[in-house]
Image 1: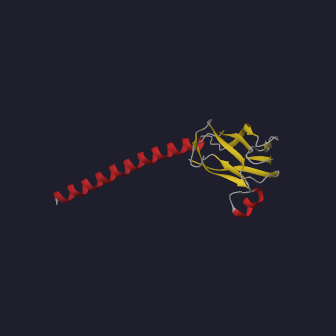
Image 2: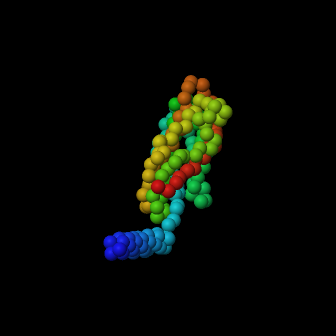
Image 3: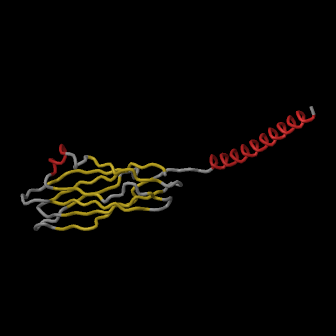
Length: 173
């Protein structure tokens, strides 16, 4: 009988210790959760500037581009005029993480997407190339550059004027 009481007391002691450990764990988790909910998280990824990097003339007329960052700084709008074969325009756009959390660039959204056959024929023989920034992580306050190159291929001449926009698809890391 005494042995049965000792076993029962041991089980009660183990259960009490378990409850105390669970209570301490809950307190630690709730304090950590409270700290995280009180922090001020912000998510802001913008284009801060765009500048012409270079311009190469294929003949006597220089290619031209009008570029601007839209009002909410989420998109770059361009109007490009290429005059003859071997014209080239290149720009560099700066992306900044103004938020408080790291972000990952999922993709650069192009409009229209001149890589698709239905749109490519609108600007042929001009090609548009972007530097690869997919998967890059930008910490708060950091910047990253995207290079945009327009090149007039081929031998047939003729003025090509077209509009082009790029925007960002991002997520928190």
